[in-house]
Amino acid sequence: MSDLAGKVAVVTGGTRGIGFATAGLLAQAGATVVITGRDRETAEKRAAELGEHVHGVALDVADSAAIKDVFKAVAKEHGRIDVLVASAGVLEGGLIGMLTDDHVSKTLTTNVAGSINSVQAAARAMMRKRTGSIVLIGSIVGERGNAGQMVYAASKAALVAAAKSAAKELGRHGIRVNAVAPGVIATDLISEQSDEVLERIKGDTALGRLGTAEEVAKVIRFLVSDDASFVTGQVLGIDGGLVL
Ligand code: NDP
Image: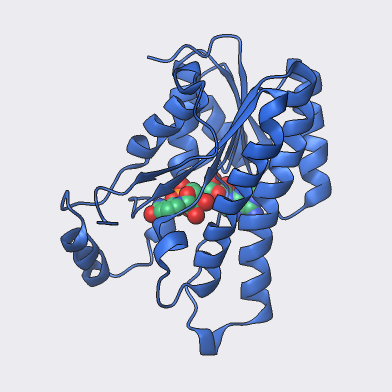
């Protein structure tokens, strides 16, 4: 198990799914973890489920000023930020002919601006200590595209470019930035997909099944740990062979 003792991690979108599973593994590895979600009560309740070293804070990542405030408060209270996992994200399908301004704006603001602003806020704290590790969550559809997901796929492709650019810029400050590109993972995010679509996806996946949040979390734990100390600017696929 990776040793994250003494490290402070922020996991946006840590109340559910991939973020929640990641927060649990980082806490098990010894980190103090701050999970965020839009509702304070939910964030605090979910944090309590993960133990005394996990704290829940309200943060809507669509609010750039709130991101600055929350990261500043975390750095002040815990003395540092070593790890950022930017897992907050939304998936709303939308055929091109049906897209609305609200859909485009919500997806890009939450997924892209939310992650980019979180990187900026975390990097400010990390630069002071000249160490840090950041993971952004892309998606297999960011590379391959998907009918009915033009905006979501674009948002995920943007995060890969963001991770690579941030890796180049922040490397000299001792900060690593990577992305993961999950395939289809059984979380709330895909709850609206029909059984027929999910069966088709399983059939297209070499391993013949969907992934679990824990399987993504284990890879993220590796990426933020010192075991990955010379890994930066990479996109790690976690898709059971769906991309093949
Ligand atoms: P879930 O729907 O299970 O969880 C989403 C998380 O994001 C929740 O914790 C939610 O918190 C949070 N969230 C949503 N909107 C906001 C917001 N505006 N501000 C703050 N937090 C927000 O999704 P997953 O765990 O599956 O997804 C996590 C990431 O992984 C996303 O970026 C997604 O795009 C990506 N991904 C997921 C895949 C999958 O198949 N599941 C595949 C590829 C990528 P709350 O509701 O408490 O506010």
